Length: 312
Image (cartoon, rainbow, N blue to C red; front, side):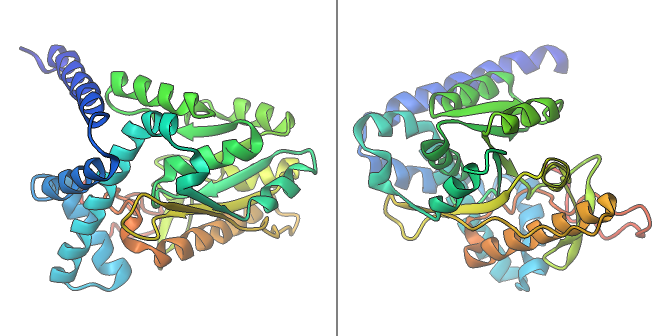
């Protein structure tokens, strides 16, 4: 069977495996299920050489870890990712039994409310830290709805399913390609736009320092903020312990750099935003998604650096 024809079969198998797992997990206590999620994450680490190599390399130089330390650290990263995936799968079921505020402590939401009083909408920047899906839900609790930018999953069936779950939880999802017009329209309606800015920007990015190394970063938030005078805030979520509890934090709006040179200001503000995101990750490093090849794309004038591993 050709590779082209085998993809739909694999996609259906992955989709129904996920739906079956969701059904089974609803039948067991939440803490048992979360323990299972951690275990699956840890067990997948030895078999996922492609992403494990990326994560160990990234963490070693970014955090100054030795090889053995990096391996132990990455196992914790996989555990966190397994737990995050499980919590997302169970979230609609959890919310039928518990109130959101019973397991999510929101800090700094007054900054978002104050920003929206200006009537120009708000951009909230975040990272794949803790359980980032809960961050979107927390913003939706304040704003009524959040427009989130997402990269489509490789499996279209899983992508459609995850999108439905997110939309039921108060988010509007638009794909990264062609997202500019929906974003501008949503901001003009005084809406909130959530953007993850911690992943490699394959095209159209600007290079700014991230953990001491230039990284191609999405310039859209800075461009929109400068062009339309939109307040930009940043926030993140993290797990304060091992029980089912999360904290979400939002900082006050950035004081934007405005020199009159739009191109330079976009780069300067993107660097400003990225420094804030890096500070969040340094507080809870094992809860960030190190499996992504964040530094893969290099500046045109930089001699090809040592590879940090294949792109996920």
